[in-house]
Length: 169
Length: 397
Image 1: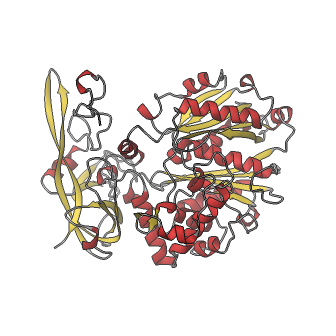
Image 2: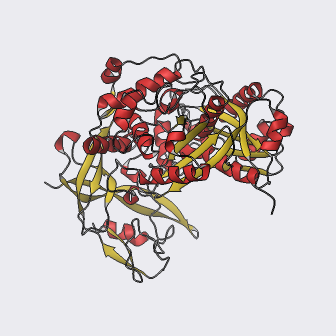
Image 3: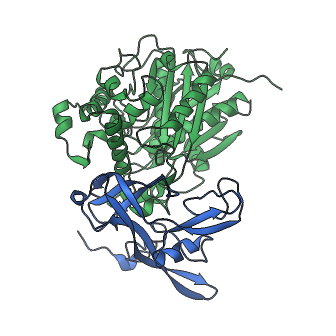
């Protein structure tokens, strides 16, 4: 392939190796960007959390600012149990840029005591051959790329995390 | 209050679907050209409303608020409505529901519903990466879910486990739809044949899916004309095709809210079908021909169940025994469906409507004998939303 003329190209930051705002695959997690930032703050401490309605008791996932059952804004943060069981699992070659190939994905089911019924997740630290339906997996948190944010006249850096699941050894 | 009018479709056309060296506007102009041949005498000035369906933006499509640009490129000066809709894979089928309401209420007289998508990008990774925007971005896409095969393969695993569906039964869907699409010159896989040995030997995409279980990545555009019954009679001598009933059910954004205990059951599709059948005053067995959203082979198997063409759990046997073929109980995806024609998201619903229109006018390539009632269906998102439209050669009395 001929060398890309990156220095002359204006308006294609991804090709230039820079932060690609339009193609960012991670959430904007900073308190300046959303009202559910405690989710990400908790995640940084290894906690998987969501919001519970103080009025009707409904637990939402993802967390929110108002309850999806009664629209009350009187919510509290609760911890979610961090393990689930594989119901179905698969792998795919050629996942989106930035993810490992093959990418292992699973449909998880949770105990009756868990507020969630099921969830589609990425499995890491394993290959497809290492896991099967019925296996228990647990939450794992990792760093993802930071991004710059303009706050008044300063540019500050927002560190970010995201989560996946891994086999319980 | 003025009496409700009847809305009809009178014809339409599509571009060539496939990996295209063309923009969405190039392909929309191709589709308009095909439509002008399908509805002789139709002029841009006859059209007072435009609803354009598309999902992607940026390099894929030019810009947001695309409808005025489409109007310009197609020579339209809409005076009743000019809007873009995005319901992903059901875009132009959703547009048909909206156009029906506008026509029945008297706000619009003649509406062009069109859809277009340019999914193949200069580099392959761009097409996959772009698909991160087609899921609940912050919650499901972060898991690496972009294009949908990993999710639908879990649906297939669930259906095989609960109902005993086999790989060969899924193969029957792909083989049937490739046969239907063989003579369709606009199909991405037009002229392509497939037998069971080839199907079973195909490269694995995501177990149990091989290459032929998945619809391809497609560029394309389609156009269909909806009009009030009165205006339509002045525009065409062909039999009118009435929109009898519609239904759209959306249950969730992200995977955590899947509406059933297992991925094998799609209660939200069942409900969308029931709403549309009730409005149409028909039952599933009245449907002579159907276009369902066969994004994957397993999808069609579950759709024929939830739409009531066969019992729940018997979709595999239903397709494998030929009930979806042109002489079967409910011929399905008679122009090749998404599997053979391809699936440029926003363009698919209008493409299905064109096929249904031809079927009910008795001029389809794979004509179902004496077809009177037809159905189209799309799913969209993470199988989050189902859209159903029921058509007939006569209106609901």
